[in-house]
Image 1 (cartoon, rainbow, N blue to C red):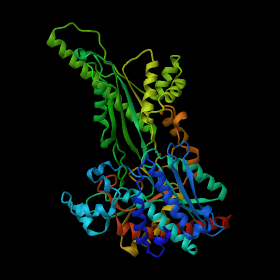
Image 2: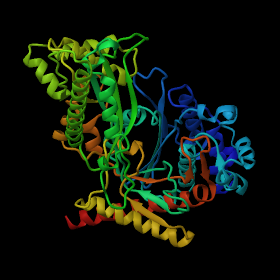
Image 3: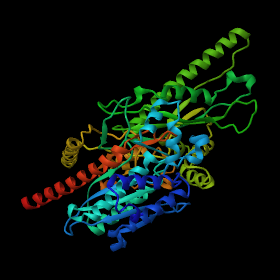
Image 4: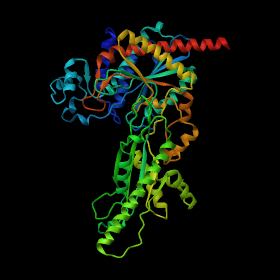
Length: 563
């Protein structure tokens, strides 16, 4: 690859690399992730600096991964006596291409797509962008093969201009960001190893995950100094099944699930209110009962879970809130069923049965405690169930665990059990009370201001990258107590939990997102804006990298002098 791009200016290098990366079918959960990782490693290895220092490019295979997916690393060593290091990182996987429909065979062909969308009269904005020549289309064009291309081009730039580098650069490309984040989670141990063996001081991480307009006509380039977290709160709903000829005597878990969805899905009042930030409400990702075939019996149980972004809230605060919502929802369902039954009796004149529609609401942590008091062994049940259902995907395995715990309970009452399942992403941000964090913010702003003056771009700083990103796993704000409040409500954390909380806390790397700019990530009209992404962004990252390394090294020397 080096021979193809060595004589090109920066923007052409990045465009060529982006197009080559997009052409690789790097869909999450497929062997394409391995193929694109190999391409990245081979590209780096072709650079003259790494021809001279081949051991500065390497792979890390993700442990126990069925596809043998891997992370790719490279290291550029600046002045020999400097420990300060900036981490460049990006994810190498993409979402699938089914949304392209009849254009599926061209989903990775940027040239074919721009021709198609130039004639696409059903969306004038897309058509105008395609005709302008300023946009590259294709799956992964914005999320985020162009982000990898920017980093690769900057790695090449610094390797060719070592005199400009007052410190070190560590680059990593991670697999599996679009699903379980197995790549970045595996990389934590490698980052820790490098820190200890090479005595590195990680100043900051720069991610290039995509940024996008927040409203029509928005041309601001947003820089995010933290990352939103994510919870997946789940509801196992156990009802009281009956024949359809006697439904008023039953408790339908679908009715409870529907009431919970109505109260939680897109409920903006449940979202945190943080001034100046794009804060998203919870959204339902899964709702269904567990009937496997048609019959005239109502469902016994239902599964329900939500995507729940967290910014400053903790898992305990979310759990407490969802328990309250569930209690209120179940009370309304009980009252509604009771009223329906009373009306039914008044219409039919039938004698009243002794019925109750009381529905217990309990967190997993409290339910396990209940079972222990009843002389039941939840731990063994959890371990055995995870083993029995190891062929299922993780969320379904978690639901099976809750189901088996419910079966052990001799009471068998109607209940809602609230718990957490994977994935979980911690939130992080630059803290106002942290001297280091505020120094870092000031330094980044100084670097950005220089680029703004030179290019005329308008930049704005935000506290949280509003979508999910691997940067969530580079630092940790939660206390041990807050983490335990999460893990105690996560079935079998000791069995399937993969987050190395202590190592993340020790690394404590601030993550700054300076993203490629584009539109429609995860849509078939996905596209990246070339003038900013291929020209301005690499300059912005170079300026920020050099400024951070100089400033932190100078600050460290001053501190030592004072001491």
